[in-house]
Amino acid sequence: MSAPVASHGVTGAQDAGAFLVRLTRLDPSAVVRLRSYRGRTDLWAMLPWNVMVTRTVDGDGPGDATVAAADLLHQLARGARSLPVRRDSDWRWGLPPDGARSVERLPVAELRRVAEAAAGALRDATENGVGGQPVGERALRDALLDHVAIVVTTDTTQRIEISQRLVQGVTRMGFLGGRPSPVESDVHVRLAGRWVGLAAPYGAAWLPAVSQLGLRPATPHTFG
Image 1 (cartoon, rainbow, N blue to C red):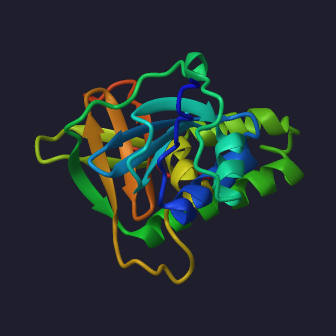
Image 2: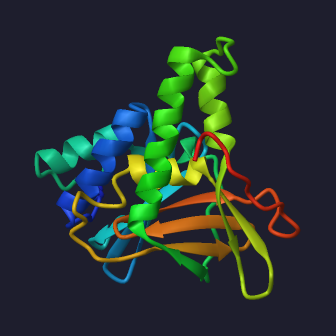
């Protein structure tokens, strides 16, 4: 007698599909980890610029399993319930610990402004160089992603740096929603252990902090 076929258990196909479509556009070979609890499933994935992103969708899920994002997207698109071939060994990253705390709220419009300023600066530098000198596009993108776009000071005078890596994570994954935003909500800056995160209306992006204490203030910068 053959063993029953495992189910992916995701019932929020529209929400999961939106996450997977964006993810596979950014990285066609991406894997996605499904972790389920109390009728909900967290989808986790690592973006090409080393930012962890997650979205919670409806469904009991498979417990804890990693599969190819493209394979799961295919299953959802055709209404299939079976779990794609497991690729648990391909998951090589840690996750933020439970118990994240919110330390600040930022308007969605401000995150959009920061992301759009960065895109404009990248286009200008690509076309005109920096200081009149040509610079490779990859070097420009790396400099852009590492730029500290926002600094938050907590009530204990702790300074938290928000880099463009995180800002691009929530914007390029569509976590801010459309224009005008259908959800009137802020983006929460969160801390979980050594991780810093941006929790937006439709998902969150996380990045391990280099340091959470004694960080320098952000100064005006071309990349916004």
